[in-house]
Image 1 (tube, one colour):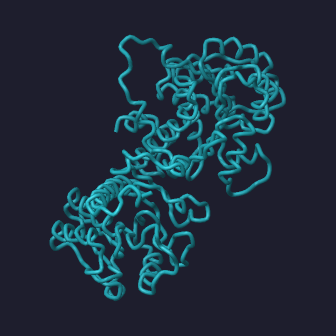
Image 2 (cartoon, rainbow, N blue to C red; image 1 turned 180 degrees about the horizontal axis):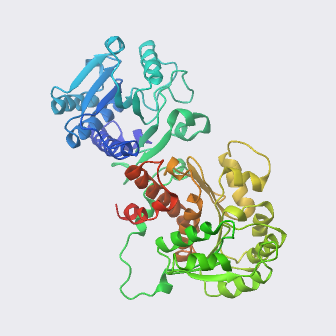
Image 3 (cartoon, rainbow, N blue to C red; image 1 turned 60 degrees about the vertical axis):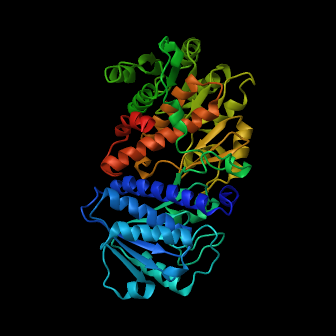
Length: 503
């Protein structure tokens, strides 16, 4: 696809490289802060081959130097400087001019003979997506040395880690983050390569933004900025009912926080009205914390499950709602499962099923919904997915996910690294978010956001699912860049929903 868009036109290739390098530089500026604040005098190591990826790295370093004047760069080249692609060579010349005395150009042999220096970042620009194993002797020795070092804070690959293609070289670069500018590369998202590519960041750049993607690309990846279309002026003459009424069935005495978090997220995601149906003790606890929601108590059985009277209560409440979320924090017993199955079959509202509702019996009820009913979105993580289908594996193929979605007449959002979305016809990848989301409550916030968007656009559930996923991931990234991924709480990402939408 890249060749088809750029053609054999050096000016277009140079323009694309400039955009890619700038985007990579900005992404590094942000992502490094998940580890620590930028030091005054950071040290960068660039691994450069002779191709365009080296040019991307040089441009990224030029941007970093402009923002952080104290930065120093060491470039280790596997080829002589006169062997560089001319466009990459021009980018290196610009970097030399920008860096002045704070740039070293070394051969692999010279680098391996120098005293090891701790680096803040190593930037891999050796090989691009056209790589075919094996690595050359010089590159193999260089990557083996870099991979073995423990004094590098952030390891970044461009396009693909060097040594990764249709096959993987044993000394392939091991990245913390792989930046993919312009066109997504399939090997980045293959399960077997996860330990090599690390976190994948897809960067949208010119001139690819204005080009229609080919069919394979359309079926492959979603824009990480899909949620930005939600950031619009709302009509002056509007009412709270214009922005969706969400019905949330969630919470228990054991897990009251799930109802709280999903309700907060639905409100924060722009819902006009939120009604949360939850046990009376939970409603009393949470009403003072989130007074914007309407908290409706539910009757319980002596064992703490939902009484069958819940079916009638939900049926009445559903008449005024636009979409419903079922599952966060519920405790499932026989009466609760019976009640949920009846609600799902008898309620025509669009539904999001999450957490406790993701069981074989409850999800099977989706198949029994009339064809005229609203859409259903399922939001399992890998463990919940196999709780539904049975068995246990460490991966779900694209074909399996599409077949599962077709069978259940649902959109499936399989949460993970990366999150994948299928409506039975398409299989899309959403490379957003990071390990900051690997904590309890992150799914409750996502499902709350999703039901809010579904209530506002019930006729376009796929967009609601995609926008919720990218918005959720972008907010988590901003939180991690501000505070790191360790010493934070899940609800701290809620204030970042505004920043992620408007950034």
